[in-house]
Length: 216
Image (tube, rainbow, N blue to C red; front, top):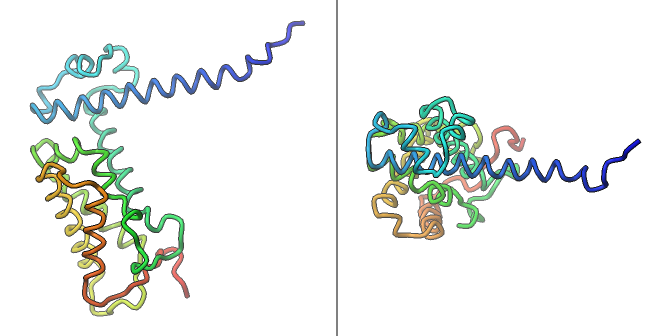
């Protein structure tokens, strides 16, 4: 009876890890190529050949991961939205509540998110490739504010929905100016600016609770 070599049991996971990295690299290259091409021409004019040539891959690799370019675009959008949500939630991801007075610029990561997806956001602003997408982004931020957070001692006369929308579009306004300026500032600078705006606001609630863990 033969026995496997002691190292053979660890070889498979290492091989799988290598394959996973290769898949991630291939998908990343295809998404980056798609965004770059969409900044140059209309989506309908982009072919699979354009995509695989730009990503230095073959057609077989493309079809191993995607049915068509529409599925590729949908995944690129989903990636950006997933990262946006995680970045917005970062300041309160590991706590039941946070004190705005103690918030630091390093805790604001939404601008790092935009910078990671700089080409994607530039595409949104510079072209009509994804019409209505800014409203979708603002809608996501608004819904996160409404469903995740609840300020303590809030003015009962304030409409939460309207206020959440106001905050969402204010954040998008900062992002929009940043993009139009060619990302001239660092994400850290943008986070510091937002923090200064928050600190200079009129007197209001300083403690914000997670809606699902509100203190009673």
